[in-house]
Length: 435
Ligand code: ASP
Image 1 (cartoon, rainbow, N blue to C red):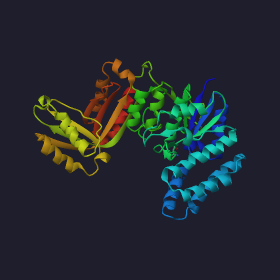
Image 2: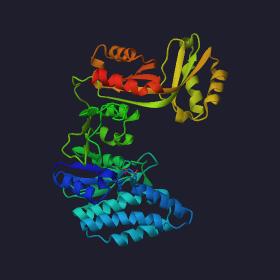
Image 3: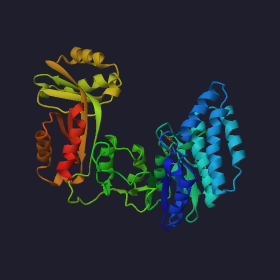
């Protein structure tokens, strides 16, 4: 039987109305039989996510303070869902037990995980599905990695037929202590589960109809992306296009399971499909993404290209100051290092001192307030003149390009411009390649 693993995010589960939509989606396709759920999210912009409320409870409990007033808000939301949908589950007892455990064990990962736990318990009871406990199946090696034993454990628990509900976001270490993924991590649980059951597809249901070609706050009504590769997605999401958690790609990418981003509020919309490889379409550019607030160190030293170890010495400075870098454009006598202002923090002067002392450059210039924009597309490599077209478009707008970098994967062209030209640049690129 075909199996689709379907992950539903917080907004898809925000209230009883949303629960109904999720159920209708599941029932519309019998292969949707492994369901991964987030905790209920915000019902509107002024609302709170259950996970955030739990984290407040944890802090209060940790300081020995009363959690009741905050926990009551969690209580009300679950009770409302259960009563409205007439779900046969003893929600009062489940909530009382959860509250007791939070007070007795105010450990952050445990408390944060309770939103997903409750959400999945309630949903499983409603659709009469089997509840899978991640603390018994998803084994964390450390904060970032799970043990490979997770896959056989999960696949053993999830049968070839039947309906299963898995809470997202958490698992446990080898000692059974609850561990969580980073925020938004139910996407990762979905990907791991899809891989474990060798799913035909991993459907990720959210509140938008997939990825857009550019940020809709910058470009007016951008087109959606129908299909893109994992690599293109990596480039776009690293630069700020967020729909799917970055780390959710790896487990499915390695085994070639496609991901489909779908909209719970508009299930008929096509969404975005993420695949291992695809034929370049007539559209050269797949998407445009970017970020503001980078700082560039431009280091000039005559005959730099002949000095063995120059690059390493420069990067060593950043490493020893614990600053990760994003790009290193080079020329014959220049090497630049581009870092995020956030990563640099207040270490600018320290790094300049280090460079002066160890590199003894002819010159060092600092360019701050830099925005980086990536234009991404697998088709770019097959088209002559893509870069020329892009630079002409920016020149026509009078935009001063501070950096140019073509990723070695040849699926992106990166430009750095002043922060103030960020929106203008994205619009110019969009107009040139899309419409
Ligand atoms: N509930 C968690 C969060 O708010 C995890 C998730 O929704 O994916 O981050």
